[in-house]
Length: 243
Image (tube, rainbow, N blue to C red; front, side, top):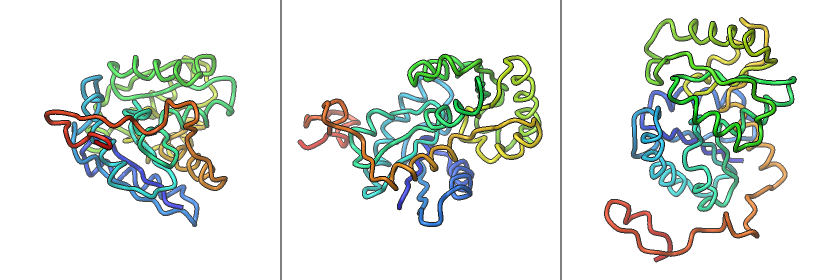
C-alpha cells in the first residue's frame, strides 16, 4: 500500500521530521511518500495561514495520484473536506486521527498545542469530530511551530506542559497538537507515565487499516463526490476542475 503524507506548510525540514515519524510506525507492506506543500505559509499558526495553505494541500493531492490513503499533517486539518472531494483514496487529518485513537484510552484526553491563538481552532475540531465529551482541555505551550526544531528547550517545555495538563484536567492521555511534535511522543509518554498520541502515527495506522479492508470515502450522498466543473479566475485559474 502507498500512503502519501502531506505537510501543508512549505518548510521541508518539518516534512523530514514528519516522514521519520510516519515511517517509524508504518507496516512492512506500506510505502510512505512524504511531500511538502508546493505553495503557502512556512508554518500554520492562524486562520489566515490555514486558509492560504489549502491550495497547496489540494495541489499535493493532485500531484500524487494512485495512493491508498492521504494524511494531512497539520493539526488544523486544513482543506480536509476539499481533499476528500478530489482524492479517490481516503483522506485523514492528524487531529481527527489522534482524537480517534486517544478517546478509547481512558475517560478523557487533553490536547497540548503550540500557541494560544490556535486553541480555538483545536476546540472547534474537537466539537466537529464529536469528541466534546472525551476532551477535557486544550492547552498551549507557547512555542511557535518553527521553534520546535530550533529551540533546544522545546522538548522539556512540551513535556512539562503535558505533565501539568494531566494533573490540571485529570486526563488519562495526551494528544500532541502539532505535527512538528511527532518525534516527541514516545519520550514524553515515558516521562509523564501516560499515553501520548501523535497524529502522524495515528493517521498512518488508521489509513493502513482502511486500505487493508479496501475502504473508500463514500460519495453516494453527493457531498464528497468530485467537485462540479467550473471556471476559476485569477491566481486560482489552474485549480479549475473539468472545464
